[in-house]
Picture (cartoon, rainbow over the protein chains, first blue to last red):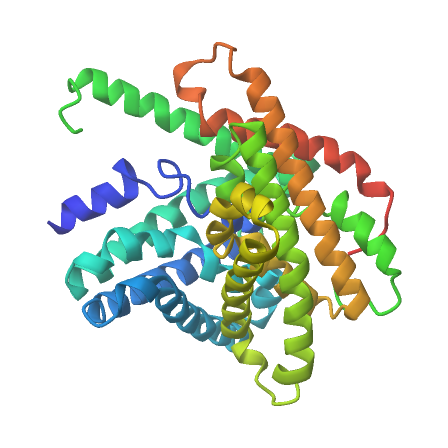
Length: 204
Length: 199
């Protein structure tokens, strides 16, 4: 059960590549691997704990006002994360700027709350949230590695540009983020189509 | 970044429209930008609604932030305050529109609830705090960002309508090609970046 949750959230229904959710922050923070790691951890923290809380409270939240209640729960966890990184990683906190606060409106969290935490027990919801966050972080890191290597010639600040090649300024600018995510979605679509053809679509 | 007390609000307006366009440079409001941009009329309707809500919410958030949140030392609660203000403002605009501008309400109505969770709306309120804008700077920043968002989604939808008849590789259809088109639009907007030296 844990394994199927993991595979589904990271690959089959990857929030970013398959559902096209949570794109804003994904594109904005991926020019440095370090920022992406912190952002990914922040999302895992917020989505896991929000799903857990919402799942615990699922029988007490009136259905008509559930959106605003969920938003407030999410906002509370995000404030906590924001305070933690402000205290311990002030430099990264400054670099991420408003994007930490924007985790609140990250569609992934609301999506998991609506699609899973509302009708499932707390522990499963926590795991579902964490795995959805991992799927997001994975994409974040892949794009960040490509952008940082090609744009600055470094990974996590370490120089990997051994040949002394010219770096691509475009890679650290906004357009490259759009191109990379587009190409990544294309590649995943091709692999999915191949898998479906090979397995006769048995995985659904 | 940092303090911006001396920048002319008009410059901020033009900058938020072109050089730091909400979608194409700051990546805000992507979810609806990608998913609601396949038809021009719908996209333009959403764009108008977003622009309207943006002007109101940033103005109200500025007033609440500077008149209530800061004097009481509650800055760390600003996310919570902003999101509640946004949700409430959207609700009030919807009710007022239903009463006084029923035509517009019928046309924009379906988009209004969606806007509460549009990150561009929360995003510009957060930017306004980080850059410590004054009142008029904030108003024009909200107005410019809203128009910029509308312009971008309308342009993307127009391009996608033209492309609907093109034959693409199957995996590239839908979101993948939309991102690549957006990338090309963003590249074009980079061309504006020398004009206004703000941010």
